[in-house]
Image (cartoon, rainbow, N blue to C red; front, side, top):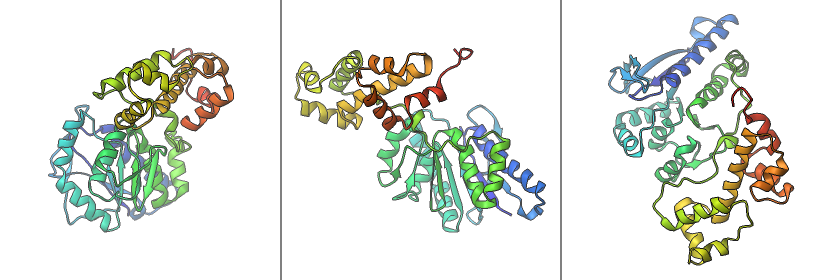
Amino acid sequence: MPSAAILGFDDVYASVLGGFADMLQVANAHLRRQGAAPEQLFEWQFISVDGRSVRACNGLELAMRPLSMDSRFDLVFIPSRHYRGWDEFQSFLGRQAEARAWLIRQWQQGTWLVANCTGTFLLADTGLLDHRVATTTWWLEGHFRSRFPRVDLQMRPVVTEADRLVCGGAHATFLLQTARVLTHFVGKAVAMQCARSMLIDLTQTTQTPLLPLIADKSHNDALVHRAQQWLEEHMTETVRIAELADRLAVSERTLGRRFQRVLGQSPLTYLQHLRIDTARALLEAGDLSTERIAQYVGYRDISSFSRLFRERVGITPGAYRERFQLSADED
């Protein structure tokens, strides 16, 4: 009987914590239809460090069982937690010493550890992800890289798996994570049946088309702020970075160094990302041709634009429009 523990803490997303168990319930239903014996079905417990109930971020009170260092599960799920700012989140992580020790002990006993969205930070804090592939939610990528430099962070995949450590991106990826885990425990056929019955798209293997490309502006470098503003205002024109540096009264080398330090990319890469993100918005919201959109964002050569778009987003402009364009009703 595969046993699972679902870790709970205050501010957890109830939909993720409960949704993981719901998928195990659906798996059990399919297993029963196939004649599985009771001992072949999943069982699970909701646990917290001290056994007290937790309050989900939507206000639900959720009953928990206490965590025990002597327990052993086949599978442990670490759900996502509502993010209220970096300082508060670091404070939360700093209080999880007992949970971290328990997770390490579980993994050492052969347990699969599955962490979703912000829950990947708690898993990474154990050190188990060091020198292993992992992913996390896109909007905390910078903080993750800074806090866990030894983790091989990959932002393209929706779900990563390495040595019984499964990570997922933003919190809805728990559906794909659970399907991945079900494949290991009860086989691909049952996992596929669960996905079909719950309308889960298992072909979504990359999060690249969903990720914003332009860098955050939440920094204090006035020079880079001025450069970003100028690039946004002139992105439809022929832009020369040397000319931009002259306008800002700095050398091109200095400008490049400041961009790299603050944003982790060059001014040219920032400009390309700015243009591609603008093109994405136009593809989603309107019916302009790809040629017109390319020209609007500063590209005279449609083939160059299409090649760059596919390189950065992972699909062609036409495929992106087909997948993400808003319908008239949605408008």
